[in-house]
Length: 117
Image (cartoon, rainbow, N blue to C red; front, side):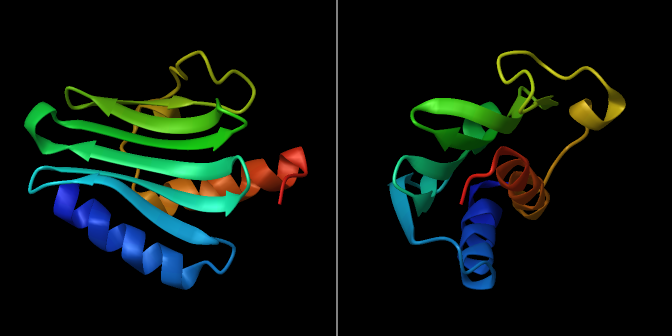
C-alpha cells in the first residue's frame, strides 16, 4: 500500500461504513497521507502512510489512547492488540501485512467487545 492507495481506501471505506461521522485529512502530499475517520467524540481511526520511510500506522484511538493498531515500520508489520496495546503481537497474524479494510473489520470487533459505539 502506498499513500495514494491509502487515500483511495479511506474514501471507499467511509462510503461503505455508515458509522463514520467525519473524515479529516490532516496532512497530504504525493508520498504522505494522514487522516482521521471519526466515529464519536474522542473515538476515531487514524490512518497514516509515508512512502519515503515505508511506514504505515492504522490505529483505533479513544480518549487519546491507542486501543488497537496495525503498524508497519521499515517494511515490518506488527499488531498492537486491544488486550495489550503497548506491546507488539509476535504471533504470525500479528506480523502479517494488513489493509485498511482488514483493520476496520478488526476495529468493529474491538468496539463491540469493549461496548463502544
